[in-house]
Image (tube, rainbow, N blue to C red; front, side, top):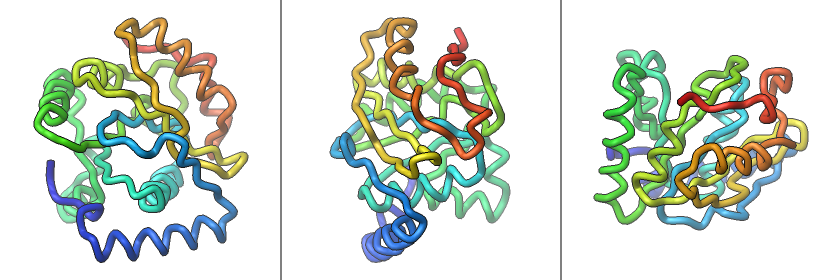
Length: 200
């Protein structure tokens, strides 16, 4: 995995303090219930607004999470793409999703510590089906899912729970959907966990 801002001690420390101050001024609270983990796939939901990214980034700094996150390739144009990678971004070519899943599994096998954020919705628009890459990466790598969230209604976010998938995605999604049922995105009409299914 490439070098990121989270691996830059001085800047990372400075950003942690700045993020803590900004979140406090905005009235946000940080959920650190399950943030102490060496390896996991972090689900990022609900994703309904461009505001999700800066809030989630600040939460990562405050929680001292050394993370990588996956985003669509269009977010990584020349110049800006270099900045996005420095912030932990991994461009995703959706036509090569199978290779990405196996490549991430292999990266977990090579690493003593690795946290990867995978937004299952894949877009901030309203969706009724989650992409399943997050699940199969966790199962293939033998690591837990970190159920991470940003709740704009209650102004709280973080990693609320570690979930160990059993390998049956239908059974596991029932429990995952229950966890996200009470959270509200910036645009709440675009997220309803009860109506979320998974792409097979």
